[in-house]
Image (cartoon, rainbow, N blue to C red; front, side, top):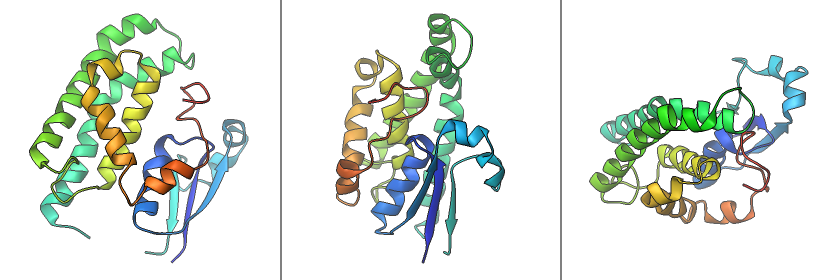
Length: 194
């Protein structure tokens, strides 16, 4: 079976896909581009006008599957207001980062990560569901990494999230990949090396 992953030359949204494929033992080809190349026309190649996308030739207990999907959806929707802060802090949007942080990002991060903590405690496995590592864990761990790179207070407020991210990255199915992957920055909102 052939897998092709298309994304920018950063980790961000594509990293959970890379981790999932690696955890599943699947080889994949990666096609990357810069933001300038995207704006110059690469966007037209996307099936939806967005990235990443995966070309694939190709299951779990239904309750766990639903919980995994719900967890990632809940996190995304709840944490969404924090993304404005990340973009403003990075200079990608105009605004006052301290004000946006206090009014939007901090409440959103607290709500999102309180729920993640609850899910981890309920599962008893150290991951979102009792059976272990899922794509939601990979997605959440990459978001932890991004938030920690952008918010100087993150690790102090959510130490469990930092430990969770380390636990996900050290899972035997992806540990080697995490230690040897291309050195890509976390996102275009973070400085290189973060």
